[in-house]
Length: 197
Image (cartoon, rainbow, N blue to C red; front, side, top):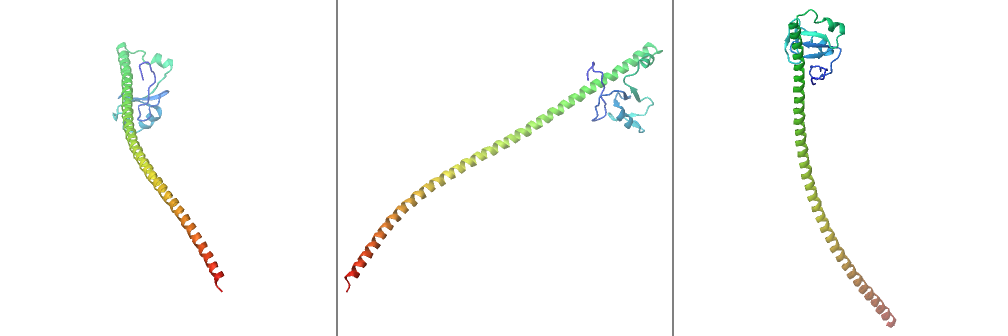
């Protein structure tokens, strides 16, 4: 809200609706939308929902039209002395100054809270990033370790494979020798049968 902004906001916590039509104004310089004003100020004794001030006086709460008719504006201050008109105007301007100050304080509070939340989120994000980096480093180490194990298995497989091929060659050689011996024995055995009467 600025000096050139002519829209009041409801001071009811968590409402902050732009006011138009009718509004409820309190002696403690707070203003409320018609819905919240009607609900809050129908009880007795009335308490300001914004600052908890007791509103026991007859004119401590006023329901006012925010855009009065030209006829009303022409007559509302008619007949009053200039010093009273200036006093009323000064109080009305003080009300607006208070609303502007209050809005500025609210915006500053909102900004401070948003900055604190941002810092908290950045802290959480940094911690999460550090955790992910540690996990990534651990996984890279594990991958390197597994690659080393795999290389060891490949080497052992290669050695076993070479030994197996060597044994195969030896077996084939022995099998050849065995087959030739058996064949020779069979030939010798058949020759001895031919010699026998």
